[in-house]
Length: 268
Image 1 (tube, one colour):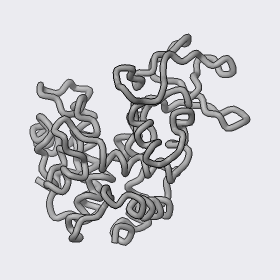
Image 2 (cartoon, rainbow, N blue to C red; image 1 turned 180 degrees about the vertical axis):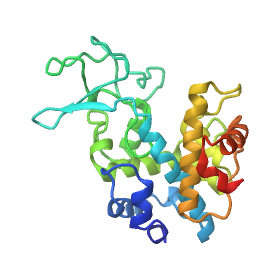
Image 3 (spheres, rainbow, N blue to C red; image 1 turned 60 degrees about the horizontal axis):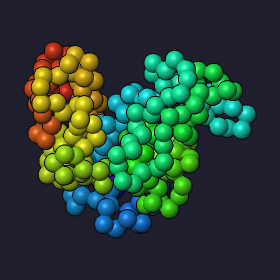
Image 4 (cartoon, rainbow, N blue to C red; image 1 turned 30 degrees about the vertical axis):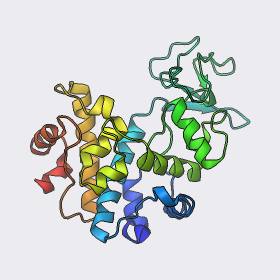
């Protein structure tokens, strides 16, 4: 049912990358649900609930891609990728997604500048966001590596380069990474909360207890617009709740009337 609701045409309009295909997505959903009986994805027991989950999921994908830490990259003759992080000026680079405070995680530390491509860093030394939902942090790479039974610590770029691995990382994030509330995105959707999914995906920055800075206000408004666009494409009766994410309802009310998230006007 998932891939009949999200058909090829809808998929192409919602997924902002030629790296991902409708066929690959459908195969990944089937593989994930076959191998992960306790954390199945898109397994709602009625069609409208399934449409709600698909809308929330696909609504996060374009925003995740736009906010990549490493959008500029080059590839050597052997296929190895090198990237230039934002504001990087050369020398040793401290990966902001390397946490040494976690008891378990891929080994990480300062990364030297590439001698082959000055101003760039070997991508496989970094644990920035990759895949449809931007898997990030060295400890998350280790966890999904153990789930998939493959080495992503030495080759984190597999999440970006191999479509099946990328989708699996997104499904794992959706069903396994909790927000500060202890709820995963999948649980939040089942409880009727879009805000809870945003809290699980980017809560520290995008669910702020104080009034948003203009930078994050714009980013969250863009994310809301993508969600509303996905909801319209998938013919949702009404949006999920904005609860579960501080100040999200206020921002939704503002951006949907001001034009900052125009796709949301249909749901006022």
